[in-house]
Image (cartoon, rainbow, N blue to C red; front, top):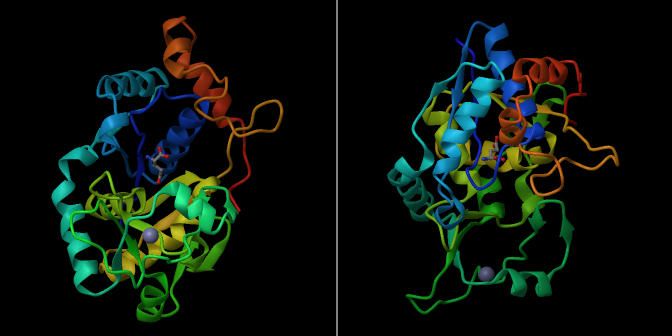
Length: 272
Ligand code: GLU
Ligand code: ZN
């Protein structure tokens, strides 16, 4: 089977060094296996998406010396998200949640790196129709249905999928036709991705994706969670914190090929 990897940036901010590293990891793993490296623009976050950034991303990747095959952007795939959500809804695995972030935080301010575990307050609530609602996965019901399943990570090896860390995770957002979890799982399957590469900060998300694959009878790829580039203070290089965008370095005449080579030498540990 041919190895297919992808880089899936969201056009809501410039690419920075962390993105360059992620793109290079995905690109190089495909190249080493004589496979294919895909670019997918994750642009369903309408209000925050800036279409002009997708072009900038392509110029940035070219500047880094990468070659890719671009697959359709997420905004063209909304029907597949709706169909999958309907299927989960019909299976009785989703319920409507009208809570605001604030309400959830007040209910259970269990700090998580990537959000707040939801305590299930809306599970048995009767909603008046028309109220804006997200759709959440009844994670206990989902786990009961799929039983014990595993997934394979390049460093962690065989991992038992346990999505409960997130609580009843959002599958369709209140304001968008999908959540990150649903969209990325469906798209990776549709694009034939066989090796999902992503930063180790998303390691726990993979539990959710693995369960969704099982519920929706999707093919199961392998995963490669990579370490994150840190700044001098040991903090994750985040979009908003300091790191100059790739576009600025490119426009300033910096050598992208050299930068890519430096990033390849980073030799970050694989994610945990
Ligand atoms: N659009 C996501 C991001 O930019 C993709 C993450 C993933 O690879 O799953 O972080
Ligand atoms: Zn709720």
